[in-house]
Image 1 (cartoon, rainbow, N blue to C red):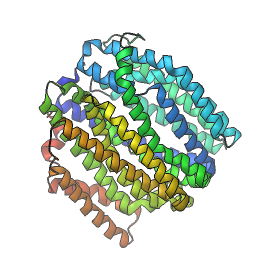
Image 2 (image 1 turned 135 degrees about the horizontal axis):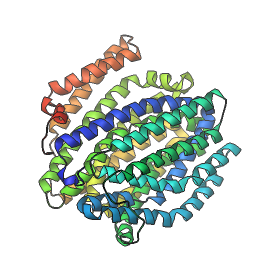
Image 3 (image 1 turned 135 degrees about the vertical axis):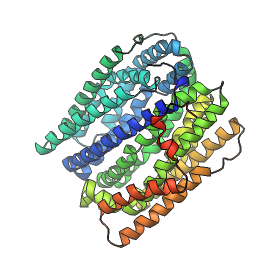
Length: 482
């Protein structure tokens, strides 16, 4: 198994992305079903508490990572012979900051507490945090452009979690039982991943202080930026919970969960190609630009199509997944689907900024975005409830995307890129939305809309040359990644 991301072929990268997308779609389908069971288990108010708990613990718990993974990945991709030391240093640094992070999470849990169950569930999730360090071992597979083991672990955890939720639902369990089930299933996945790493023909990463200083120096602005991103992306859930109540928070959290689940698209693509981007700079600028353009085109295909479908089918999708009592949340799907477009390209912008060493600039963007998001939510949520939060989320992501893109173009001394195939992809998505809207007005059920989208969108993409047959067959050919 090659250890050099800079040597990844087009075939290998395409296969790895395709494998991840297929596996993550299967997990997404299962995850949507499981989320629906959790919603039905806890009710709208209980789910509002559960989701808010996860948002706040995730924001505080992020401090245990704080951008270190991205730095370790970048440096290990550039210097494969030192990957074990970089990952070991990252694991050591995580252990050093774990105790204060756990204490902060406990304090947040106590402050949030709206019920006895919410408090106990939060404490259970905090106690399991030390095991999160094992997840860093997934970087070893990512650096090899071979993410089969992480996908197996993801699937195993999803299946076990789904089975546990089904048992809890049928036996009338609650939030505490869900927290215990989540901890146990995550732990089982981490153990399997650790055993798989032992089978790799590489040295086992050991905690070391060797690269802690550069990790902190480079990772600190990246971590602050990541925390700001997490804050302005999820603080609206907390504001809705505080200003509009548990029920509104539950409605918003249900449809926002669809946005969260959809992150598998940019994550799948960048998990494979982030090491390629890192290994290309500064020695091969042209390869960096070609890879970035290819990533942008893939992100456009996925996100534009999702927006076209959501614009027409939001209400039947929400009814199918969450039940009729959550249909009132369906209007929020459209702005959140539009947000997904800018989130996808934001993943690419952030990776390029890290590769170029401009992660400090991202902090300023995050600070402004957080201030804008907070101000907008405090004005709009009291007036419009969760819909105000949804539109504010979109406005914030548009601001962030535009600013980050300007930084990237300036740093690489590039003009505003031509739309090219991305523009043709937007045209294909627009035509798809028109077709789906016509079917919807004719009374077509959800399954017919799904079938039409699956048939029409690829045909439109090929017809408008947004995709070519050569690219579709890339997984079968051995070509250097372009």
